[in-house]
Length: 161
Image 1 (cartoon, rainbow, N blue to C red):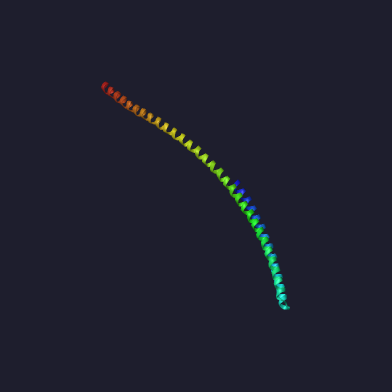
Image 2 (cartoon, one colour):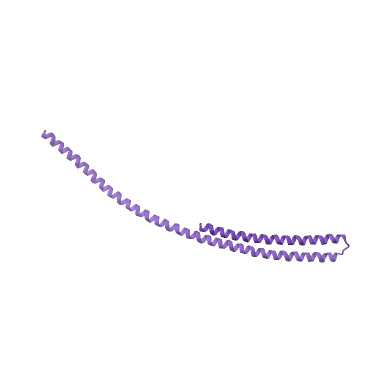
């Protein structure tokens, strides 16, 4: 139950981290889409007018630089976000590893205790078997003596009669 609660907490943290990353990406995408629309409106406006190629190259170069800067910033943010996620996963893995080790130690100790108890039980069983064998021999001897005694009593009864 403790492990499930810990896992649930870690899962919630990871979900929150992924949600934040998704929001950042959505905002970045919206910003880039807006810039592209601006570029397209500038280009469509230029086609209706007389324009020179130098002016067009300057506008496109400026838009390209803005997009490249925006993408570079988003890449850094994503790298940082994934680093956080990687760190959270490593922490979760270490936490689980520690808990699994602790449970394994408990199981090992319980098995040792069980085996010791089983050995003690086997020794008691062997002792009881030995005592039963001795008792069985005395019982058989007693039955034989009783049969001999009855036979002798019957013989003397027959002699007297």
